[in-house]
Amino acid sequence: MEKYHKTDIYPVEKENERDENYEANNPQIDSKITRHNYHTLERKCTYTQFINKRIEELNLPTKPRKDAVLMAFFVIGSDREFFKDLTPYEQERFFEDCTHYFADKYGEENIISAVVHVDETTPHMHLNLMPIRNGRICCKDLFNHTALTKLQTDFHEAVGKRWGLERGKEGSDSKHLSTAEYKANKIMINAYKDASEIKSSAQSELQEIKEAVKKAEAHYDDTISQIQTAKEQRDKLVAEREAEADYAQELERAKNGEIAHSKSGMKAQIVALTVENKSLAEENKRLKKDNSFLFDSYQKEKRMHDNYDKAIKAISLFSEKEPEAFARVFYRAASILQPFIPTDDRPAPIARNRLREIEEEIKREQEKSNKKHKDSNDKDGK
Image 1 (tube, one colour):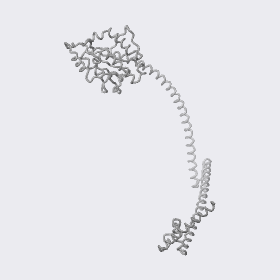
Image 2 (image 1 turned 30 degrees about the horizontal axis):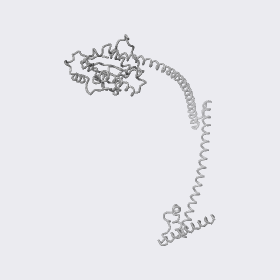
Image 3 (image 1 turned 135 degrees about the horizontal axis):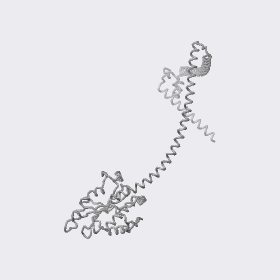
Image 4 (image 1 turned 45 degrees about the vertical axis):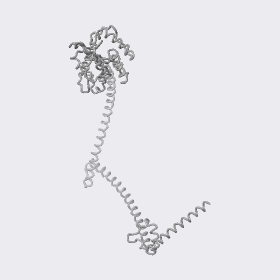
């Protein structure tokens, strides 16, 4: 608990009620999640406005002294282990229980603000209240050493036990820490825990790095082997291409009638001519095969063309000798006959009455054929 005079209140309010634009000196504050801070009890005015209004309500016989303690400040929380097992809802319930305890003990009308900070390493609540007792401001009587010791005991009985917390050792010679000292101490403790976690993580990462290095070395050896193999293949390919270039040069010389006189030159020419001869023989064999295929295709196309000419001549003769019969056939199978009939050799015009008669004859023939087919099926069914 800390005590504040009137002139000290604004900086405390600024730190307690910070928003996302608050420029924090504390490295433990994560401004990105400051918006998640919340109140368990919030006033719609500044701390100073609330205090002035409350003083007016008390109707004191004299104004408070300039050095009077107008605000008592409490930091309420626990360690990281306690909060890590609580859901956000359970954390909020815990801080609401703390607020209700102080409201019941010191009067809700005297609580200036109760705000929970979740944007630091460990959640905690800042509770500010006016030290009022029996209608007067009396911080010295309300929060002396004996009263604070009893407050710690009563708070543990009312709230701490319910949440599984242990009370601090009574009669301990431990020095009471200021808010700054408390936060610094928490930072040191958390830093020690973080260092232990970092060390453990570093050892794990070191082992992973060693394994990665081992794999990298194996990969390196494999890569060197592949490079050596690729180099040998390249050298072999270069030698073959150089030999091919020499053979090509000697072949060109042989074609031009230049006979080599050295043994190596004659050998190169013989090899080049042998390869060239084999290549020409293969090409000749392929051309013979292509020629045979082309000749067969030509014969097939010629036969089809001759048959096509015969069909056209037959249709033309049929159209000329039997125009009416041809018309009957043409109109019954026009799509089949049209490709074989030149544009100028379409069926001669027939009188409309005769054309209708032909159509009716075709219809009757079709009906007769269908009836005959039906009778045949009925007879077979019996």
